Length: 144
Image (cartoon, rainbow, N blue to C red):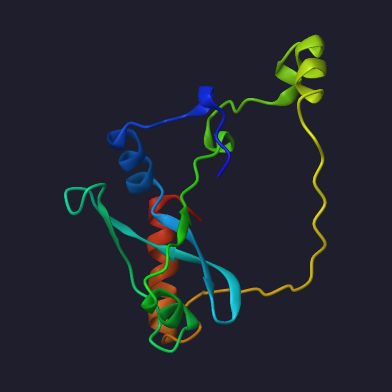
C-alpha cells in the first residue's frame, strides 16, 4: 500500500482504535482460484501476538478457508471516511490554486473490469423472526 511519508500512522494504539471502531474489514487473499476480496467482521485482540491478532469466522465451505490454510500473507483493509463527519471536507473547500497544484501530482488509473461478483449477506438463510429482530436492532442503533 502506498503511504506518503506525511500520511504515515505508525502508532499501534491509533490503528487498533480504528479497527475496533470499524471492525468490518475487507480481506484480500491470493489463493488457488486467484485474487479475492471479502467483507468480514473482525474482532481485535490487541494484546495477543506482536501487533495484535484478528479473530473472525467464515463458512467452512468458503474458498477463504483454503486460501488461509496455506499461511500466505493476506491484506485486510479497515476504512474511516470523512463522509461520516457532521461536516465532511469537500474538494471545493480548498483554494483553487491549491487544488491546481495537487492535480499536477496525481495520475488517472483505468482498470478494466473482467469479473463482477456481488454478495448480499442479509440473513437470507435465517428464520423470519431473526431477520425482523436484526432489523429492529439496527434501527435501535440508528444505523437504519
